[in-house]
Amino acid sequence: MAPDGRRKRLRAYRLGFRGEFLASVALMAKGYRIVARRYRTKLGEIDLIARRGDLIAIVEVKARPTLAQAMDAIGRESAWRIEGAADMWLSCQRDFPRLSVRFDMVAVLPWRWPVHVENVFSGRR
Image (cartoon, rainbow, N blue to C red; front, side, top):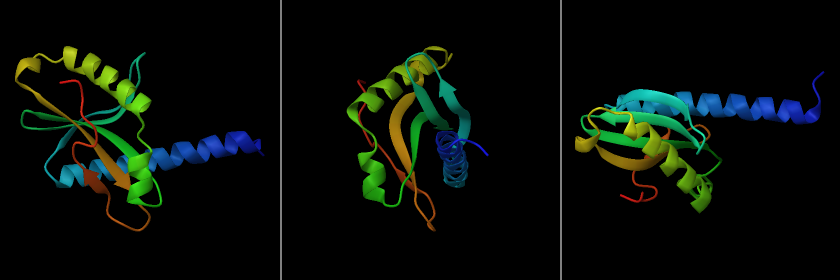
């Protein structure tokens, strides 16, 4: 048997992985192409990077019981980390000057289709 802390981390990891999968399916159904998953940098991590035309959606995925709890789960510090990671990813893109960037969230709620919230926070741009 695994220690209690390890079991909780494994459960959280699986929940996050499942949430990101459901979020990516919901975004693809809306016409987005997933270009990166779990993009990690020294500054932070981006759950999903989705593209539709010249629009880049930097997507934070939150699995919570309610939409309000999912919205509240993105704090100022996590927004800064996501922005920093987004800057690093964007700097590697050849077509960077023509891209529009938006910071979105997908809330994965129990027994519901994932809810896509556009412009959940504003970047420095």
